[in-house]
Amino acid sequence: MPGDQNETKLVSFAIANGTRRKIINFLANGSKSTGEIGEIVGKATLDFHLRILQQAGLIKLEEGIVKLSEYGKNFLKNKTEKSEEKTVDFSQAKPIEIARIRQVLPCIADSSRLRVSANMTPSLGGILKLLEPLFPRSNYSDRKDSLIIKKGEIITTIYGSGKVIIRMIKNEDEAKEELERLKSIINEGIAKGEAPAPREKVKVDLMEIYKHLPQTNCGKCGEQGCYSFAIKLMARQASLEKCTLLKEPEYKSNQERLHVLVNYI
Image (cartoon, rainbow, N blue to C red):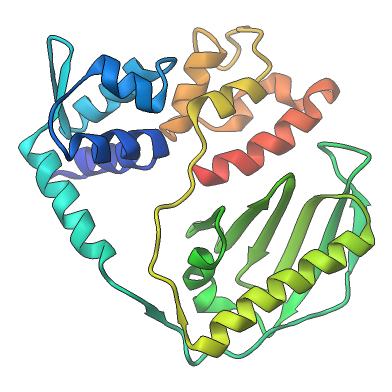
């Protein structure tokens, strides 16, 4: 059973990915062949995901048959018990208001779209993390005290300070509509005094990262190719800054999208 800090980090990395969580849950019903698992989660990166789960001690793989290890069974059981917590209280929070839009700029990823800045008052502070379950595609970052919300192409980042940035907006009117939608959802949750039970975080897939890299396999980042670099990014063993090509004008849109995606890792 993983116990030291490095092993715990390996387990955390293993279960941070949606595909690997799906594999673990699929194995809860018993052993499966790699073919059966591939039908459920796809075969393109199956070997990579199985290797990560095996290194974390969550599964055993023998002659094409995959099953949960004893640690994997206990981990899944504990995870299920924790998920039975029904609500999170934030009854002391106050309803928010949206201050006027402060800045409207062209979006780097697509110059035909806009990047809009605004503010929420009062600042959400300590309750921001509790708001995550209110949005179907969202992820809270402890490091940045920010909540990233995806709705179609629109990407919204709310910070604990109250600052709000919305990317990929068509026009200012759409920005106002989106801000009102956020305000309504948040205030409805505050009025109830509780948030839904925490859910699994949305995580990007390895191929989502890879497809936005230059794919030149130049090796300047120190890896054999862009696919290897994508794996290192997924494992948080590398930073985007190592990919110097992303700083070139032709990859500006890729760089912005990747900066958003890595916040989901």
